[in-house]
Amino acid sequence: MVKRVTTILGLAAGAAAGLGALNTWLSWQAGPLENPLPGSGHFYHWVRDNEVYNIFYKVQGGGRPVVLVHGIHAAASSAEMLHPFSGLARDHRVYALDLLGFGLSDRPGRTYTAIDYVDLLDDFLRDVVQQPAAIIGSGLGAAYAITVAARAPERVDRLILICPTGLEHLADPPSTWQRLAGRVLRTPILGSALFNALVSRRALRYFLTERVYADPARVTEAMIDAYYCTSHQAGARYAPAAFIGGALNQSVRETYPTLSQPVQIVWGRAAKITPVSDANQFIRLRPQSHLRVFDRAGLLPHDECPDEFLALAREALGAARSEPAADA
Image (cartoon, rainbow, N blue to C red; front, side, top):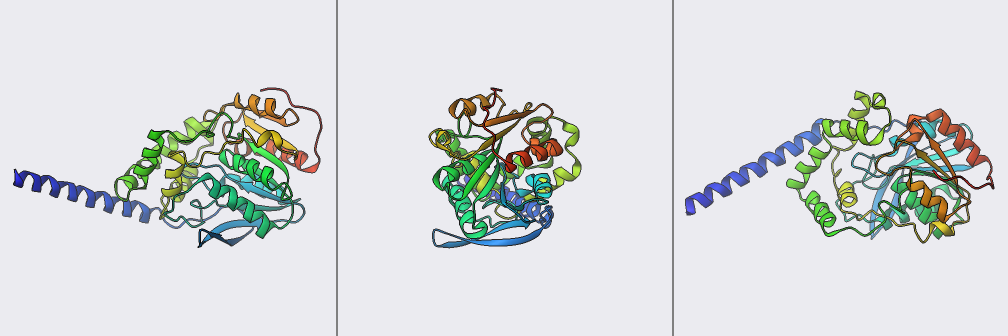
């Protein structure tokens, strides 16, 4: 019996060592990460819980400031905002930051919460932008932007929300199973192995072609390589683990109706994770918001329909309109 137990423990230790070596190799072979946005790169030294975190951002252009906030998923980064950043920099001073735990920002093994990102965005506006700015936010990034706009209206003069969450989706406290999944993903060996499976090239291809883009032909090997690279950096699993664990959910049910700023909502007709029907609730809660639905787009209309989105964004940033939007 003792011999059998010893054998089992030895096999388990060997398997753990093998998984650990595989995880290390996958992280190493992904290579260095680069940010594809033009402009100059900087680090904002953000103080949080007596720690200093380096938050990477790009900035370009001149004029009224616009801050771009990417969505949250396992391979998220400011690269999502390439087209709006490049186009709007002709008329605005545009900032795009990698949220903590993503892109070229620090990826500490801390316990991430939604309020981390709300406070980060608020502090970034105060310390870096230093004047009222428009925010273009995607997904959960839009929910964080709404929260900041309600909390500090002097820092935010208008909002463009892309497939926003916070009413129907990613708004409620996590379930027991979500919290458990988040804890498992944080574990050193098993968590790393599960996360590596989640962000394998095959899994990323499925996520992009089946869940994100309306037109699968837009998903190129170069895109998959970029998503793979950013999701295989050291510490890459910690923020996504919090997302999967429901800790990054942000409700805007109370704050969204109170906004005083002009709001433009943008949705892709083919969005699956946050369907266009969610837009109805945003309009019902705040009828003066404006809605535009792009028929040939999914979750990232700013990437699938860049020219149309840019024209709409320029209009929304140029002047507020007063007529209400129609339901989706």
